[in-house]
Length: 253
Image (cartoon, rainbow, N blue to C red):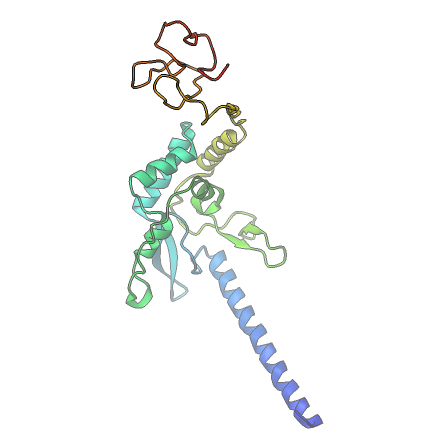
């Protein structure tokens, strides 16, 4: 490197290495593009509800994706519950209560390639956004998506005629079913949230003069304390008790 000849040799070797790296990347991209256009699985994370199945294409073993029975059924069930008006939060809570593994944890229980030991589930919880995201992905209708290197956006792979490329012969949902589910999700997301009621200034401070219990605000019904007295400060119907028409009990309105 201290002589002109040495720097020239180093530059030539670096250029050769860069050119080889470019060729390797091009071969990898061409291979993925070939698999994508053939509707074959190019590897990576398995989409929700699918499993690889070996197929013979052009004299070589490749993989297509087929439905994984349990999770494909789960996705269809969740889709129907959403179309019936159930919320994502309620569905997530139900799946967690039933201790159903998330898709990520399910994949961790499967043995790795070449007989490698399974990693084991981590106990990841279902979340409303995680469930909703499965219907945003076109994989639920069997379409192949990829990231455009130039724009960085996710696009649906298309054939020369403009039709979407399918990686499976058995999509879990149809395009119409997916559209109906997304419409319900967007409808619920667009609903205004309930306004939060203001907190009483005496909350946590006021105490019952009879039993010493903490006084609370109840804007709906009268409740009785364990001592048989109204939390507003006296027995129900006794003099000085807060009337039923009041919106606040025991806190000055």
